[in-house]
Amino acid sequence: MKKGLLLVACLIATACATAPATPMQRADWNDVATALGKSGSVQPGNVYKVGFPRSDLAVRIDDVQLKPGLALGSWAAFLQLPQHAMVMGDLVLTEDEVNPVISALQAGGVEQTALHNHVLRESPRVMYLHFGGHGDPVALARTLRSALEKTKTPFAAGGAPATTIDLLTAELDATLGASGKINGGAYQFAIPRAERIVEHGVEIPSGCGDGDGDQLPADRQRSRGDQR
Image 1 (spheres, rainbow, N blue to C red):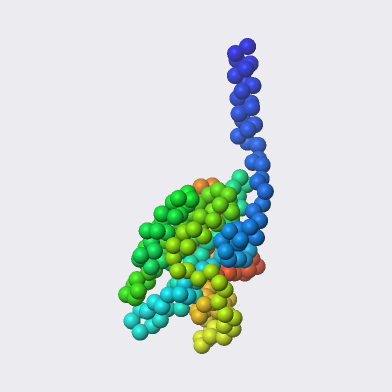
Image 2: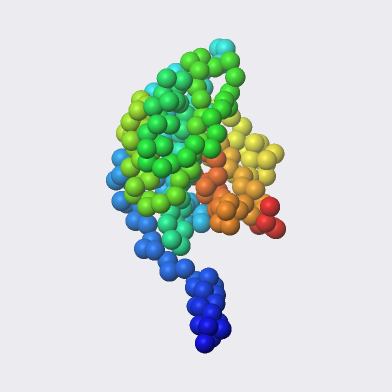
């Protein structure tokens, strides 16, 4: 009898382990935008990405003033998973903003994965805080909003985006074999890795990649190979 009960228990456990997870209700990106206080755009892989360019900062390297689209773009990318959502991103912070932002993120269960520099000899000094979290997408958005409120990050949309730039864009496109776009005073390229990127068993779409602007359309992405 005990062997029979043990067999039944094993069969139930196996069925639970192999049964597909019940998908949670797909995240309503409008609710996420409301919680953040700013809307974004849907990227390849159903990634919802929101950019927060630090247009409030006047950062210089020697005699060059950095454009927001070149190195001053905070961003967050949300991805719906079967049981919850995940968020990852990078925040551009002044030195005095770092500790308050980290405290606000940690209060909402969002982890910090890196804190480092992207540029050198800049004035004022800026730091780059990478973060990641899992849970309800609206709750994650509220936590991110709370953290951003510790900074002077603008939430209002800027003026009309520039449509021209003083660069030989066609030559740049031909050299790199990809199409760039004008964003925040810079000419940006988004070139995803060719291989599949997996974190904790979850494939990370290219739309979650670094950068505060839109990624390449799906038909211009490289084909993916074996898992890294």
